[in-house]
Amino acid sequence: MAKLHLPVVLTFAAAAVAPALAQDGPPPETSPQNAIVVTAQRSGAPMWTIDTATGTIILVGEIRAVPESTPWQPDRLEEAAGEADRVILRARPKFSPGDVLRLIFRGGRFTKLPDGTMAADYLEAAQLARLSALEAQYDRDYERGSFLMTAFDLLARRLDFDDDTTDDATEVVEEAAEDADVPIIRPERFRGEDLLDNLAEADPVSHIPCLEAAMSATEEGQGIIAARGEAWRKFDVPAVMNNPLEIALGRCWPWADAQLGEEIRSIWTGEIEQAAGASGVTLAVVPLRVLAEPQGVLDQLESRGYQIYGPEWRAQ
Image (cartoon, rainbow, N blue to C red; front, side):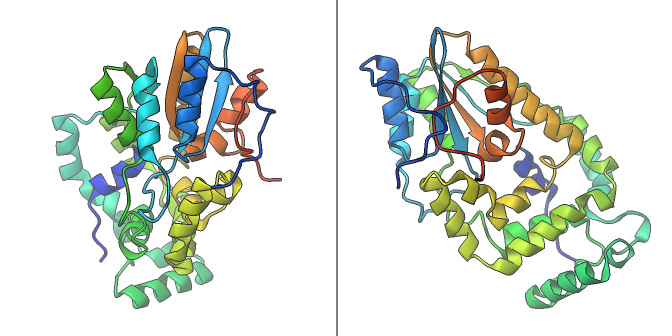
């Protein structure tokens, strides 16, 4: 049976051409705020800006596991972060010693299908045939494994999407902000107990879309990893969102969970709206899928009257 430690799963919870603009760009300025924006944009990461009455918000669209082969310039983003007035970064789940004990005693509920059931009890014939083909290809046994664990094993161990990667945008900005004593704001953290309860109570059927997407990504092969990084670097946001790897990550827990996913999006929208009342430059590193998905953070901010400058994020 495939083995994948739950902490690997929980880390998922916690990855150059001129862009087409969603709005015409604001007039050129020589202000310090504009200089920070220009420096950040030269990093090569896709980003959007929002001008407010008191300052500027920079939204960096982050993907996890940026391939080493992706030619971006994290030092430029580091420089911009060090000059910002504040940065907003993703929160870390809060796990207590009690949560660790719960994990030890209930681990089977996370790693295996319930009550001695098998994959064949849930999957249609075509889905089961695809899974069997992957089992044979990689010499694995997924018959009793949780569909979520199987999906992450396919993505992280067979596709190796997070191998040979560079620091992600959050790591770059966090280090720069700490070195420059720039205040770091993090959205409200989820309690480890709530995350584990949510995961333990999920119906296995709810993880089948995640498994299907992970199988599709794995079947496509490692070429999709470089293609995702290249599309991200070229600010082709729809291409990133339509990449089989990004689709798989977005269809898996916690993003695809109705309760957790909605909370994540609402928290990010609230943090950015609060930053709109702050003075100076706020640099926020936000998961790209949370920004650019239909009815995601960018759509929500636009619907509330904010003018957003940056790459087009919606498929034409």
